[in-house]
Image (cartoon, rainbow over the protein chains, first blue to last red):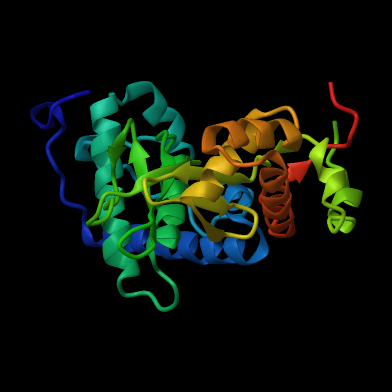
Length: 173
Length: 110
């Protein structure tokens, strides 16, 4: 596991990139809600991960990609393949964390059910489209009052909030 | 072995369950906490709570070859009569079956 000092420096997204990412998140949100309406949690995760549903837009460019790379004309058609070959685990984790934050910020403004499971499904799809391995974790806490929570982990590190209390893991998808 | 759906239909017959093997389906996960066992049915998205005793029973049901064996093990653990444990286990099985939290194999064990 790379320390934070080894992670690539943040690069602020341009306005156009932020808009594209927000559109991608909202598209994934729509698909996640549809998937949950049509099927159960397990198949929904699988469908979003494998992209059985047609995305409304291509994945936005990597959040941690050096700006110069795109300026040189890095192919955009299949960025995930490129990422597979060039990214360190630390860089992927860094990108996953920032995508998680983008999902939280974007869905805060979205109507409907944007609770933890939906957020986790959305982030699962975003990460899958970038070939970043991730697990959707569902946990529960029976006392003092029952509470369940879902979040996403990359390489064992949470990239969405794990909740205030200590949730016992029920399943990893 | 395939799940025997007739068991569900005839669940009123407690004795028919005793020789059956119980298993937790792939779409059901559970975790035992000190106070209770939380069961999640991924198919329905519903959470279920079992008290500590029922949670222990579920673990034993999953471990044992049949309900009767589970009852015997629990009777020894809790120092209760076997017939009481058999009845309690069968009632629990009925309840879990109705919620899709367990599957019961056909009577042909082995």
